[in-house]
Image 1 (cartoon, rainbow, N blue to C red):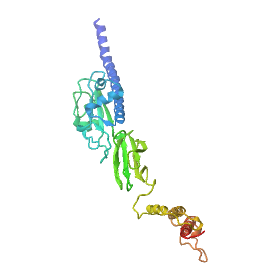
Image 2 (image 1 turned 60 degrees about the vertical axis):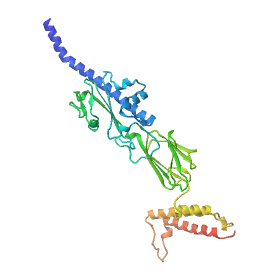
Image 3 (image 1 turned 90 degrees about the horizontal axis):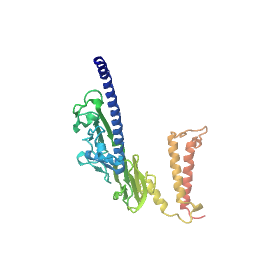
Image 4 (image 1 turned 90 degrees about the vertical axis):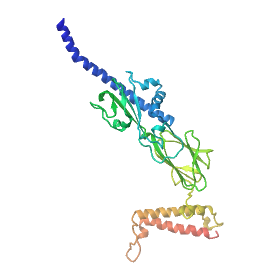
Length: 347
């Protein structure tokens, strides 16, 4: 009997530690998976609510999204408490950890999000975690290997710890609104917030908005006429001119100072044609030919002004035969003819 018990004891000493290690490993893997699900839930909650919670509100935010009891988020299956941390250097448009939660409004931003990071920490073995929040960065950068982790005390081995990092910086997209309309303010709002406006004659608004934000842009110089509704999923910019929003400067009527080409063209088109003009010439035809001339001149310049100064035997100039120059040459002739015909009375 003594011999049998001795053999059993030896076998138990050899087998039980391996069984415990496997159980612990399975528990660690489950806890790691649970924390990953919670991190995704936190990100989705921030996207949906357009709000970043304080450290004492993280568990409730995750529970609300995941349809779990708060106690299931705050405690592990082994009834050990999880720890929720916010980077002490976080800054979201002036909102720091002590002033969280951050709720997105229509305010402009001076700087992009700074250290928009959170962590969820847990252990699979007693004693309970004791964490120094001031060591957030050291814990964030740590690699879980055998030994201890800077900033975590309580006697846990590193391979009993689970660290889930949550980087919210990727949730923010830069938005730029520019108003070059010389008369009207450009109105906008985010989601269901009250409307705001970008002032005319060069006003600019820059913000970092959360992924999934509904950007509402209004035309007509007021918040009464919704022109477009955009969902923020990347960096974007819009320009307000001619009393409406567009994605670039080429849309709408130019509102640059009066000495610029675009404004002179606008005034020329609005002046009204002489009546009658020779061959029924119009300002529109003249302007279109001017654009053809400018485009041709640019193309010729990109070709190095090929043919310029080339002479054929007998003194003939080869430049008009060059295809790049020929476009410019023909447009110049048409432009002269069209503009002349506008000024000449008669059939």
